[in-house]
Length: 184
Image 1 (cartoon, rainbow, N blue to C red):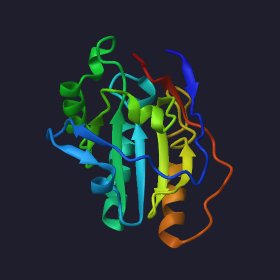
Image 2 (cartoon, rainbow, N blue to C red; image 1 turned 60 degrees about the vertical axis):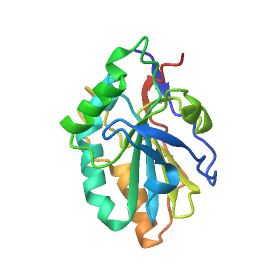
Image 3 (cartoon, helix red, strand yellow; image 1 turned 120 degrees about the vertical axis):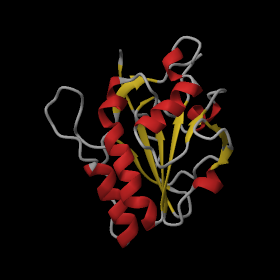
């Protein structure tokens, strides 16, 4: 497992549109259908990465805490499933059920969406405002597998509170660290 940081897409970037298959219910989901009215969190995750496994419970809790406040959540896996079969759509569906994800878990078979977002690792997080302009990209929090720091989602939670309360969102943002996206 290679430790890979986020590429840190430029703040203010407009969210690239997409329409992908939701592995949970086999429907097609677009960004415009899944976005929140006050903000949207897009997460590049996968099933096999220990960094993602480490934060799955917090990802589930974040959506439960903020969906009703107008924040949409979308998870996308772009990994090559031929070489990483644990990340296949049927296993993504089971992972979403096991972790009680209350958001679509989309499969980016072409890997075009990951490239459009300049995603580099799993997990990789992007937060967009109500107009789908990037206000945050980076880490969930300072916790990593085996570093002893509890998973709190503090960095993302602070951004979401800033969006909801119209307060300043910090420009000093730390990149996420995780497994590299498994490119074809």
